Length: 116
Image (cartoon, rainbow, N blue to C red):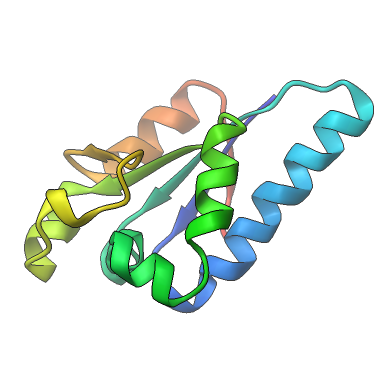
């Protein structure tokens, strides 16, 4: 099963991460394989900076989910608009040219869209 979780507001991060954790836990309990990608754009990209994630207490959760095969992507357009350097992001975050295009691609690939 495939799901893309879209985060565009900073206040939605905790819910998005909980959604991902719950999906992964369900998969472990039922033997269901999940392919999850969390796409951040707009203001939410700032929360993928390593210092911001550590300060908010989310770094360990993001790291654990990434180790559990959850993919994290950040919109390059949003990063540029916010003046955020890619080098300041959590090391395992992948930068995509456009968060909106990434969402479109994932939906065309059969990913279920989740918006916390």
